[in-house]
Length: 412
Image 1 (cartoon, rainbow, N blue to C red):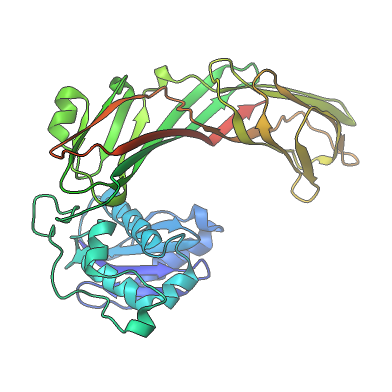
Image 2 (image 1 turned 180 degrees about the vertical axis):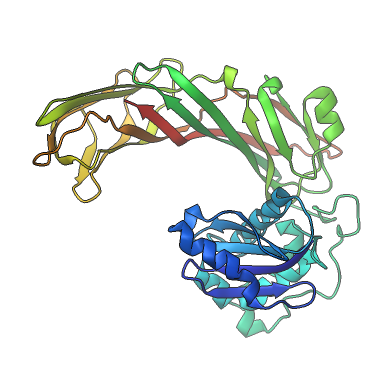
């Protein structure tokens, strides 16, 4: 399976190197470095590179390349998923975003965790909660206490059917919180017609439940969920037959599932009305953005980004109903930020465009939108109920929804 793991900076420095079989020379990474030079930017590096004897599979997270070297035929997405799980584990261990500095400062912990996650190159333990029972997270008290990071015995759940949950968990206050976070991607033409729209979501949970509870999560409209990827704790047969999620939850924070939504069921939360006109010396533009009636929730952190063509020399605003705007003369990008959009009306931006001497264009820019809507699911997905079995206590339960724009384009 996986022969070696490397963590590489965009500058090409190898800061972590772990081999699970016979050590290989770093020259195995030469095709990756060549691709990195050709790509021009870190985001453009190909995720899978085929060299003479190896496959080099990488993901870019937090400004670092996490690279796996494989010398056998394997599903690339399987390796990509493991690399993402590895990064999420380090984020959990270091209580925040993993960075080059944190990896270098906690090199011992990193190597100990990598040793437990893979056995001879095959994924073995990938649950952060389970790993923390075997390798303690770093603490400022470690130099004082001098305790060993790696425990002498396996966790109680390591050899059980529920490896993700240890036995004997006890809390004075039992609670379970579910966050349904959705990201919307859309392309809209100048007339407001939707060309394409997709919604991708994930359910993140935080569990503090005593004992060994079994949870059953049901939805008002479960048929909306498509192409779903579950945490190993979810019983697949019950989802297939009853369209509800039954599971014994891990202790602490975990990702329950990731899913996409059937496009026909999606309604866009915002309307955008752009207007651009050009003549020989310049042009005018007007843009109106507002929430649709069916949203009913405040739209926050709205940003409208307009990249103008290279022939544009200057942009001046003549009217803005609210918000702050800034035009970058170097990149020719206009950014309009609105902290909170009114529910009862749209927001308007007007301005003029000036061309460079001897230049002209009839090329209309593509507008990019970013926004966040708390307590709102763009897909319309709703939780019906969350039942807890095998335990007598009544925990505190909570569900929270949110929608953010991931790649929202308006063609003008």
